[in-house]
Length: 218
Image (cartoon, rainbow, N blue to C red; front, top):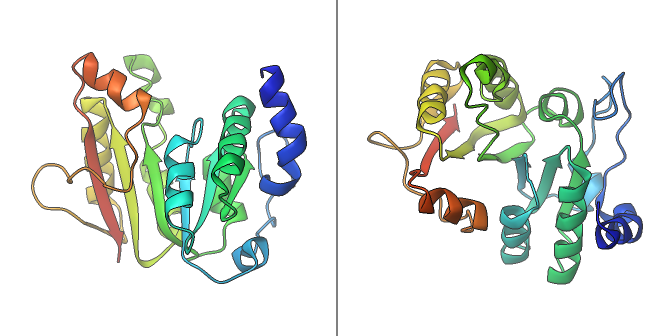
């Protein structure tokens, strides 16, 4: 991390970072670590969780714009989390918390069943080399964990700039028990709650189309 990010981590970490009991790995979540969102945020409110929040552009913007909703950012890279909490502090976003942990373990062990109103997965690592595609996040196993975390009627929102990953997402989610398409046609309309980031603009400049998907928990 840069000096500024280290300073943000030390100053703002106690406010924004959730303490997580670990299993074997540093970014793991120990079984039995379930949180109570009402205790964490000090109120009962809709909960939006972003998986792989990166530097936090989307979730900080959303948290600042929707103070009536609670937001949880899940990321494994400390530099991104430090940038997120620094920007959240500047924006006065008190309805945001951060978790430094592997996303599947957060869904499995940290979040209570049926506690999430929206789950966001925006531009996950595409692992575009053929020998690496097995490392992609959106699999049947992930869909099962997502189904367990989302309330009935909740939404799983996805976006990627890699067409073959988008089609893999469709194959996985169309076959996933407990989900139904929340869109008509080949792709969902662009989710208007997702702020346009430098990453997305860069993908568009090099000719990669952004594809959105939305699936409702049923």
